[in-house]
Amino acid sequence: MVRRWFWKGVRVLRSFRLANHRSIADEQELLLMPANHAERSVVPVTAIYGANASGKSNVIDGLGFMQSAVLQSFARWDVEGGVPRRPFRLSAQGRDQPSVYVAELVVDDVPYTYGFAVDDTEVVEEWLYSYPEKRRRMLFRRKRGDITFGTTLGGLKPKLEMLEELTRPNALFLSAANRLNLGALSPVYEWFRGDLRIRGSSHAPDTGLAERIQRLISTKPDNLNRLVSLLAAADVGITDVRIKETINRRHVHNIAIIEERIADLTGLLDSDTGPRGKRGITAELHNLHRELEYFERRGAERRAELRFVHGVEDELFSLGEESDGTRSWLRLLPTVLNVLDEGAVLAVDEIDTSLHPLLTAQLVRLFQDPETNPDNAQLIFTTHDTSLLGTMIGDVLTRDQIWFVQKNAAGATEIYPLTDFKPRKGQNIERRYLGGSYGAVPVLDEEDFVNAVRNR
Image (cartoon, rainbow, N blue to C red; front, side, top):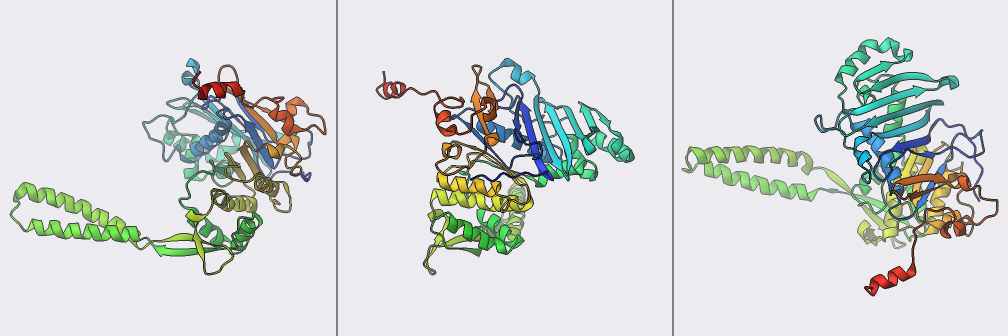
């Protein structure tokens, strides 16, 4: 049963709006506030349902693009490369219109609204407002190259003027401001840096998983017990986790090959190869010495390898020997534990990939329960798991936590909540959803499949 949990958020995401991003044309909003509970500032869980190719993933992708623009546009985007956006392509206006991203969040009990609009070449608009004591206060407003600052930043005028000069047309001002550590702007930047975690489909590769788990354990030794307990609770047969450190043998092997090649070329220098040949050999030796320096720096590095115990102590299994479901669960757990501990926001695409519905339900309940989520962490996820809508496995989601996504006649994604339909208490939400009452399901005809196979 879902516990009714009310809070006033310290660091939470209240809403996210976006327009002209991939399959999303007109502005759409994902509202993370409850329907009828003014004393509760946000919901801890938001589930997004929709047919394949409806655009569910593009909601998460849009939030990820906003985060990467804040963190990377000033330092990493190509100076002459414009803006790496992906506008709506099924309309001629998509390429001509700006893409818009807006987040409403609360940091240290102060609400903020931050947003920006970009086209293919530059930042068209950017703005940041705070609402201390429920009164709107402009921190800055930008229209292309012209930036207006609010009175809150008055004492920082010399730094701001210098920063305005440094900010490229294709970089966000908030991204650049981080370089000068401007206190009034730091809370929002730090929220994007430390309080928002984006995870793609759990089919993602296992690269770096051992290192992530190692960092989790080094941060808090008790995390190993928590990790093993969650694996045991998931009934995947694992009774213990071991982390083995090994030298990166591949780099050691590369060093041996490079050293052998250097020795061969050095010998050729002493032979009668002529000036042109010597220049070529000298250039290659220079490159080889640079490679050798690189591999010598990394050759002694140790890497972590995961091993799993299944009841028998002396029989260890590698990650590759575990099932897809076990690996999906393992990929999620380090992030889930960190997010719950830190009160952060976790957005996951296709959370149920390779997971049993009962296990997905338990994962969601970790965020619903104040005993396991005392610090106001939030979970946003896309899914096809309709059992979370029903009552067969207990109440998992409340009605204001359920959103639907579908494409309109123009092929553009639309987002809308279950509460738009005002479902009556006691209605079977799962059955009505699968029956098409709320849309966001594929329109399928069995005869079409039969005819396709029979080539009619």
